[in-house]
Length: 168
Image (cartoon, rainbow, N blue to C red; front, side):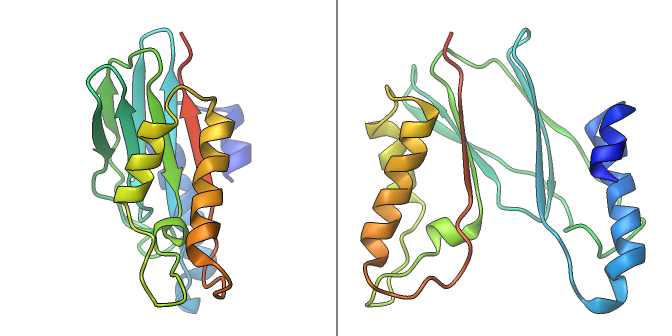
């Protein structure tokens, strides 16, 4: 329904709500759920709009101010409550070089052989250190650091990462 709904797109909130209703009907009795972070980028107005559906918050880095902001908000995972009303959040202004990182918890929760998690702070440090590079290079640097941290330990969860960078 997510793909079919894109053709008649009127906004993230109605689309995510419709997907939730369909999923709830299909998987509600299984105990399964799906998390989603919906991000809409309007480059002409330098505006971000997002909906959280149980997914980790995204991270926004402003290189001009050397500051991080969490793109968070309330939102229940998809498939749990068919009547849940999702809320859209918005951020105005996005400087050139601004970076958005959306990832699964398998990135920051990756453990080393001693059981220590990778954590959120190293993600911030890596974004800051590699801010002049492309989004793909930032992503690759993060994945390399996570793998170096994990060493030969088992992979316990999926690690998915999206890095978006405004270049002008």
